[in-house]
Amino acid sequence: MKRIITISTSSLLVLLLWACGGLVPSVHAQDMQAEMVLTLDEAIQIALVENFALKNVRLEREDALSQIKGGWAELFPKIDVNSSYTRNVKSANPFAGSDAGGLFETLGFMNWLAFNEQARTDSDVSSNPITIAEYFNRIQAGYANAGIESSNSDNLFSVPNVYANSLTINQKVFDGRAIMGAYGASKWLKPFNEQAVSREEQKLINQVKTSWFGILLLMEQESVLAQTVERSSRTLAEVSRQVSQGVAPKFQRLSAEVELANQETQLLQAKTNSATAIDNLKLLLAIPSSVVVQVRGGLETNIHEAKLSTSAEDSKIMALEKRPDLAQAFISIELEKIQLKVTKVEFLPTLDAFANFSYLGSVPDNRQVVRAAANDPFSFTKTTRNYFDDSYWNRATNVGFKLTWNLFNGFASKQRVEQRKIAIQQAENNTEFLAQAIGLEVDQSIRNLRAAQSRMMSQKKNVERAELNFEYAESRLKEGVATPLEVREASNQLDQSKLGYLQAVHDLLVARSTYDMAIGQSSN
Image 1 (tube, rainbow, N blue to C red):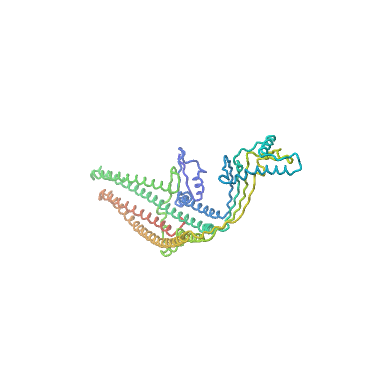
Image 2: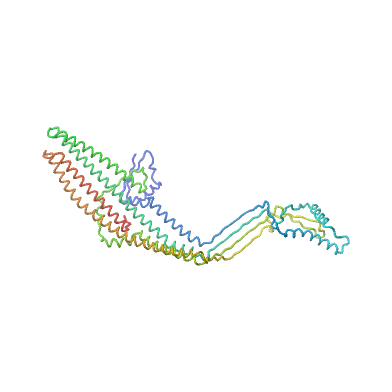
């Protein structure tokens, strides 16, 4: 079953929703085939929405907006959170190779000396000084009575569990590169990409028109060839009648049959060329290949739009005002100037403010606390601290400013400044060259437009003469005073005249479309 979809301007929105797959059943169904009838204006509007190349250019515009936001993001605070846990399986002795370790070994002797000094000087007659061996034995006995296990670590400073958590905030107070870069991008990058989109739209309109007029030309050529076949059929019928009456030789009939077969082959090739051209148009409009597209209109219906009423000088002025690529070139100069300013601020310092908030934990596996009795230095008690006891966890806060100023980098910044100045000169030269090229492009498009118009007028008169000549030849053949060869020659002249006229009309319309693109005309 074939489903015909006729598209009008008022229903174009429905078509676009259909193209997105939201309203109309799938065109890939085996029992249905969608057929779309388009006008030139509708084809242009579809292309401006669905063309893949144009979509990519618009995505580049969105990417530019994202880059602008990314540039300003450099001036926002940077907040980082870090958290780590470390398990110290075996730690190095921090005092290895020095005499500091002996200092801690003497601490036990000092406690023994202090005990003996107190025993000699107190009023208790029962307390007497003891040897160092007895002192340590009594300490160990007191630990054993209290159920306290002595640490067997060879590094008293090692903590098995270490936690480090931090919150760091950095804020740029002054960074000339970030400020100038973000400002320049926000001012010029968006219009730069918008001009790129506008120019791509103009090119796309010209591509659609050129493809459209090419299809119409092929269809008109197909129609002319169909008329040729029809005339050759009449000629063959007349020659066959004369041969049957014995007034014409058989070879004339054979010659007419061969010519008719050749013309039928040419007609078949013309139909194939038309179908190929329509497929290319569907690709340009991003229409699925399964959709059958028919074009509505004719070459001669658009002739009135091809007339040129503007002088060459006015056309050049209009092009210099409207061409998006020229506006892009001027914007590129401004962007290079921004880059120069960004490079120059390399000579200035940068100032950052920072704040660090830390929460650190050093938690031992053995969290017991040993305390000696107040009246007995060899009697001990123990308690076990919680894993999150405040004695294991500490907070730290520090704030400040960081000033960075490069005083010498081998004249690299100076060379970058020179490079940016050269880039500005190049951008200015490219802009001047483009302006001159646009002027030449406008002149050439006007010459082509006027030449095509002259050829069209000449070919139009030639078609009228060829039609009259064929009518005379056909009448003479019926009267028996002309040969079939003369009729075929007149028919060929008529065909060539019509094809030449149609080609001239096609060239005129294409030349007008090229002229519109040359002056930056966006309307269709």
